[in-house]
Length: 162
Image (tube, rainbow, N blue to C red; front, top):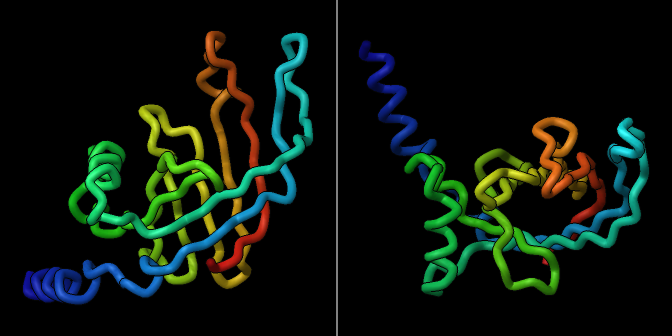
């Protein structure tokens, strides 16, 4: 039991303090390729898509009331521990609307971003060593919605620090 107590104390002192280095940086990620599946005449076909996706990942400005409110909405389902890490957000270039939260700094050399919608749609993972990213949209084939049809796809591209 003493070992668990010491581990918890260590995690509280060291492991739960988010690093500020990764959280203070911003990145621009530009998609190069996109591929996925599309339903045509009742069957699913593999397809390639054209893409112009440009994503900006940057720290959330918590001094801005609107940014804090958006964070609170997106973070409502996160634990207090997770809220410490999701201190960055992603947007599409040219759009001021925050699309989701990112855990910049939780894992060394990796950023994971979650869509902030009521139903998760997209996940972004950035490899900071290779400066590559992938955006993954898994819905459409699973959980089909005839009113709002979705096509599952993945986009890949490169990132640069801003």
